[in-house]
Length: 255
Image 1: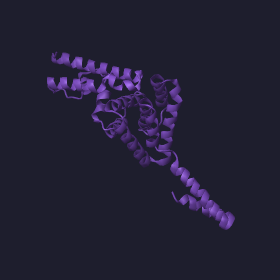
Image 2: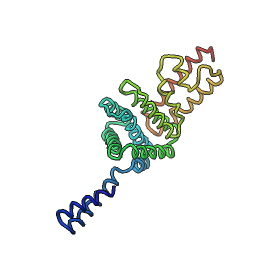
Image 3: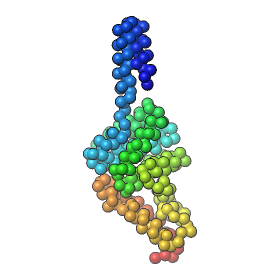
Image 4: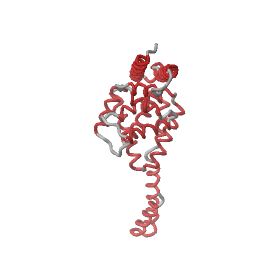
């Protein structure tokens, strides 16, 4: 980055000799400071949002991670952006749409201006902060919402699945949770087993244990502080888990 001030100094010297070189050097130094300082790290911004309320911290975290998923295939699709606007409007309110879209664009700008290495560093730092400050139930809801973002255009690419698994791991969660989320709403017994995170050859007791574990993880009361809309999303997940469990129980003649 130090080349900027010396380039400006050279141009200044060519046009204004000594004092032109001095002024060019000072101007170049100022430009370098601006480039290094902008945009601010996502970690710093997350701290500001998190200190306001758990809900705002959750929303900001969702925008950061959504930006990564949206760009996972190297493109920003109009359909994905419309999905995010609609999602923010329905889950956080109309007044939050502009704020959420600005956060997304800031993340896109950071990735474009600083490059993949810096973006990954920032993303990992943000995930680390989220893992430290958010309970696992909130982090599970983040991954759940990100899975919906990934499915917004009707297709699910391997690169998107890999990106979700990487984020889940960085959040301190088992990457296998991604497969469970993708299986929810499926129409086969195989999908039902994936929802519970077990294989078809699991014992009846293992099925019961897996079901109880899922209910505890996704219980709506554990995300009540994030608002009624997030609690309703968790309730829908519990319903899907119950439906998967009932189909497995029927297939096994379990009670």
